[in-house]
Length: 86
Image (tube, rainbow, N blue to C red; front, side, top):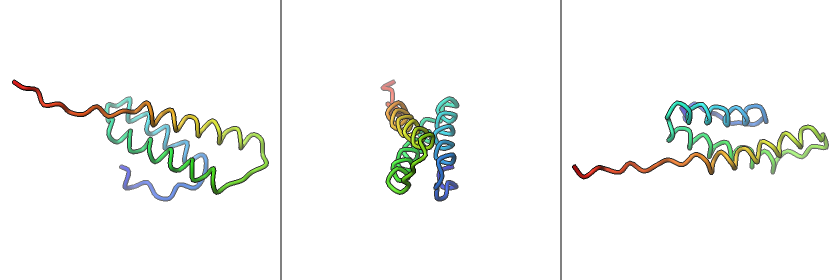
């Protein structure tokens, strides 16, 4: 799924990565969820470096998105598969 994600430029597209990561987590697809959460963080960090805006609402939305991305990436922890000794 991650291979189909092209260049993400806008805030709504970046926010969609976060929503998709949450959806995958809920479906039990932790590995894919973690990958998208990492892409979510990288994309919002890139946007914050590139785009400078004077619009207060946009700045607020961008800050909230950044905080959500960092929180999600810390929350989605892929548990290692441990072979049982049977």
